[in-house]
Amino acid sequence: MKLPILLLSLGLLFSIPGMASANPSTPDNSKGIQREKAPCDCKENGDHHMMHKDWQAKMEERQKMLLSWVDLYTPDKKAEWTAVLAEKKTLRDQWMSPENAAKREQWKNEKRAKIEELKKQFDAGKLTKEEFLKQAHGGKETSHWKTLHELKMAVDKKDNKQAAILLNQLLDQSKQHNAKIKELLKK
Image 1: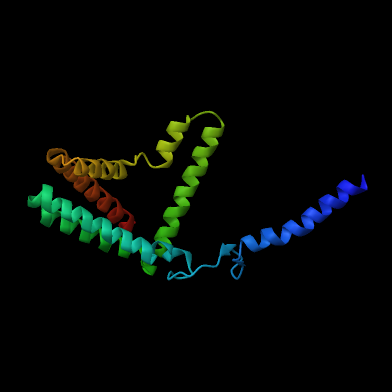
Image 2: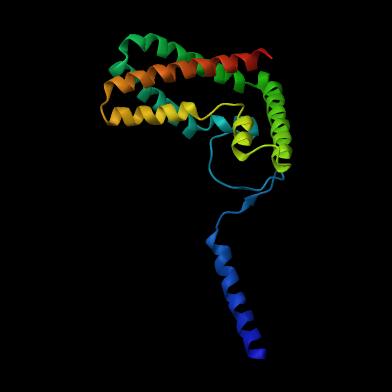
């Protein structure tokens, strides 16, 4: 009986330092939030987490890719696309500005409250999982991302007709998104 306990104790004694050294970073508890220390160019407050350099670079790359496809498949809509994308950037900058921090917080709280209410209905069996997800997302599907994915596939297949149709659809979706952001800014 003593030998198995001794072996178990020795095993733990030797393995714990190894597990601790496997994760060399330490949590940053300076603000009471447990977060891994990592070099980052974002600001410390939570409102600017979306403005991370990598995120911006990815969006710029996607925008350039879209505009190159517009040049190829729907060159007559180039000016309209440029205007919609510029408006999108302006609206995003306005929405993320410190002046709209209260509006963003109010919108987040309303969304959280709505989701909590939907969770209660789902738990009570009044909603199916599909209904819960659809209502939690405000009725919107992932149509923008689905269209973008289909567009990439059409471009890869060199299906010019389908690519043009999907670019026009994506343009309409972008206009609708801009209108939603404008509504949020007006509140």
